[in-house]
Image (cartoon, rainbow, N blue to C red):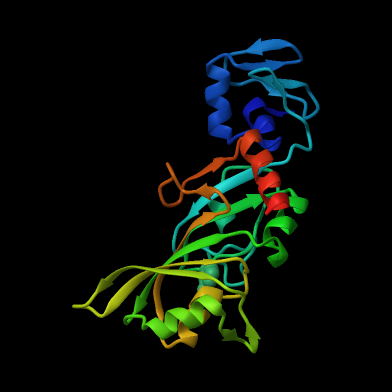
Length: 239
Ligand code: URA
């Protein structure tokens, strides 16, 4: 027997804390009976309904995290550093879709839906990933052209990208550049800029497909709703 809020979280519907709120608001039904006080322990197999939706046991879960700096995006770290899973209150086993470096911030999806993960990370599906990089120096026209058409990193050419200089700080000799890529090679954005002679000082992923970070402060996350998941599948397949 487990606390009701834990069983709700286990099914990936929401976090444990959010489940407590739903219980107190009287939105939760266990085997058809409304439960509006905390403290009930239930069997893992009970039928749970919230807002008319039955929570399946093998529910797919989709989490959108605004990853802060100083956190690894693997599930385990051999150096025992903090991982993105430490930021998320869910007992469902979710995995990051691709990776962001330890010092990269921004949008990271986590899910237990392997099909969607594969569709999102496969370069052939050309899913836009929008990054904003603060780089050392000021890009020359020729460097922008090279970045756009593809540069060689680790002996392989990157596919075409979109590059837009957002601002230049002439005093400090830095620039802020938006770059949109479709692949996810290791340290790709940093290596792309390095290949044209500029180091990346800061990197943030602002968008993946149509998903953005609206409403999420650094370190915060939210669950995608079923409409967004459907849209994401449609987006990947029609892209
Ligand atoms: N490219 C990088 O260099 N680092 C990231 O974290 C993501 C893309």
